[in-house]
Image (cartoon, rainbow, N blue to C red; front, top):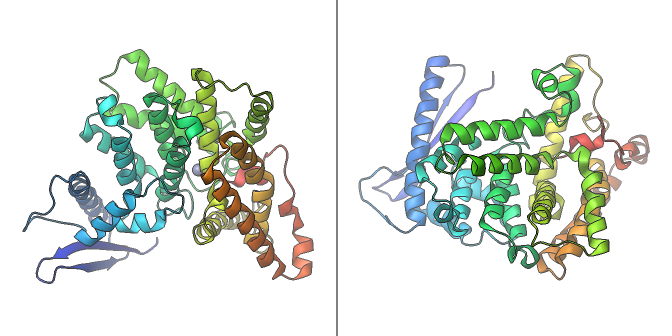
Amino acid sequence: MWCKVYCVFFLSRTHNSCVFVISASAQQGEVESGTRRKVKRLLSFQRYCHASRLLRGLVPHTPGSLHLLDDDYLGQAAHMLSKVGTWNFDIFLFDRLTNGNSLVTLMCHLFNVCGLIHHFQLDMVKLHRFLGMVQEDYHSQNPYHNAVHAADVTQAMYCYLKEPKLAEQLSPLDVFLGLMAAAAHDVDHPGVNQPFLIKTRHHLASLYQNTSVLESHHWRSTVGMLRESGLLSHLPADISQDMEQQLGSLILATDISRQNEFLLTFREHLDNQDLDLQLASHRHFMLQIALKCADICNPCRVWELSRQWSERVCEEFYRQGDLERKFDLEISPLCNQQADSVPAIQIGFISYIVEPLFEEWHRFTEPSLLSQTMMGHLHKNKARWSCLRCAHTPSDVQAHSHADEPNPKGGGGEGENIP
Ligand SMILES: [Zn+2]
C-alpha cells in the first residue's frame, strides 16, 4: 500500500501566514484512515462554505473562525475565477489553490455566473453534495483520468459554450447539460481502457456488453449520484428523466471509437451549411462535438500545460502496460514504456485524432480568436514533439513508428487510449 501524506492547511492568526501541517503516515490501519476520510469530508465542506461565501462577497473575514486555506490562497483562486473564460487558465494551479477542490469550486462558480442556480431553482446544499460526490468518485491516484482532468474539460467546455456562434443560441438547459456532462464525463474512471476491462473479464464489460463500457459507467454513475443527491428532485419527472437521457447522450459521445461517426456528420453539416441551431437536436449535436473537443483539447493548450497532460496520459498508459506485463497479458498499443515514447504517442494522437476534429471546429466557429489561438498552439506543440522525437535514436523511431499510424477501428488500438 502506498504511503500517503496528508497535508492540512490552516491559518496562523499570529503570523497571518499559511502554515503547512504535514502529518505523514503509512499503513496505520483502517480505523484511522476512516476517521481521516470523515475529517477530510468535514474540512472539505467547511472549506466550501468559506470559499463560496467569499466568492460571493458575503463574508470577507471573521476573526477567530476556522479557515482552512490562507485568505491569500482563496484570494488568488477567486482572482483566477474572474478569468475562467480565458484559454491560458492554469487548472493545475487552480487545483493547488483550492486544495484539490478545483472541480467543485469551478462548477459552483460557473453555475452561478451562468445563472443556472437561479434558473433551475437549485438547492445549493444538494448541488454541493452532488458535486462533492462526483469529485470524490474520480480516482486521485490516476495520473490522468482524475478530477483535475474533469475540471480542465469543464473549463474548456465553458470557453466553447461562450463561442458567439453557439452562445447566442444556447438555452439554459443546454448550458446546464454541457457543464454537467463535462464535469462527470469520466467519473470513477479506473485508469485502464475498455480492451483491458474486456480481456480481464471485468464485471463492467459484461454489464455493458463490451460496448462503450467506460462511458456507460460514467453516465450511470452520474445518474446514480444525481438521484442520491436529489439535485433535480424538485423538477417534474419527465423533465429530470429527459435531462438524464441527454447527459447520457453527451457522455457516450466521448467514446473515441465513435470519433469518425461524429467527425463525418460534423463535416457533412458544415459542407452543406445546414446546421440550424434553432433546432434542439442540432444544438444537442453541437454540444456533443463541443464536449468531444473539450475532452481532447490538451494539445491545443499552451505548451507548459499541454506537456503536463501529455506526460500524465502516457504515465497512465504505461501503468496499464506494467499491469499487463505483470499478469502475462498482451501489452496494449501505446502502453509499452520501452517501445512507445511520449513524443511518438503525442504526434500520432495530434495527427489522427485532434487535428481533424479541431479543423472542423475552427471552420464552425470562424471567425473565432479562440480557435485561432488553439490551432496556433496545436501546430507549435506538434512541431515541438517532433523535435523531441528526433532526439530519440533513428532505430527507435523506425522500430516504433506504428504509434504514428491510425487504427481505423480503434478496437484495442490507439483510439482506445485517448482521454
Ligand atoms: Zn476525458
